[in-house]
Image 1 (cartoon, rainbow, N blue to C red):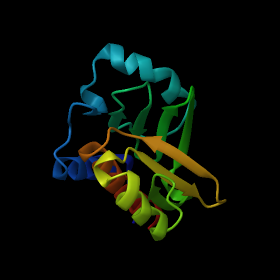
Image 2: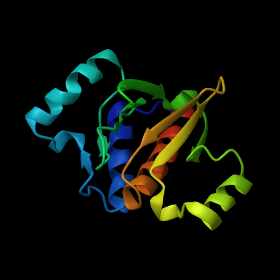
Image 3: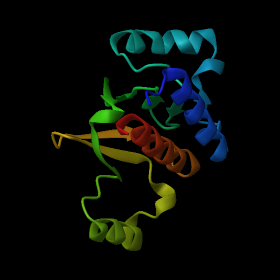
Image 4: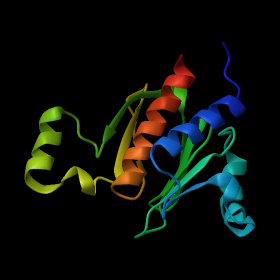
Length: 154
C-alpha cells in the first residue's frame, strides 16, 4: 500500500498528540504565523520534504527541525540539511555509538532529561545531528521520527 503525504501527515499529528504536543518549543507547521512560515519558506523551496508538519525549535540558539511527510529538514551550525526517512539506517541520541557509552553518559554526566540531540545515521554511514528542546520535545521528536521512518520504509 502506498502511503500518501496526507496519510503520513495525519499519522505524524496523531503521534504528536500522543506526546502532548504542541509545546512551547514545538508547533504544527500549519498553525505558524505567515511571518514564521516565510522564514522557513526559502529552506522548504530547496527541499522536497513533502508536507511540512511539525517544527521543533531550540530555546538557546537558532537550531530548528521540521518534520515533513517525506524528509526531515533541519538548520544547525549555520547551515540547513535534509534527509529522507527512507535513507535512515539508524536513530540514536547524542551520537552514542554503543549502549556502554549511553550508560556512561547517564551515570556520569548527562541524564536523559538533558538530551537534545538526535543522531541519524544514513545508509552510507554518514551521521547527521538534529535538535529539539531537551526533555519532552526531544523524546516526542525521536518517537515521531521512528514512526515516520517505519512508514516510509515499509
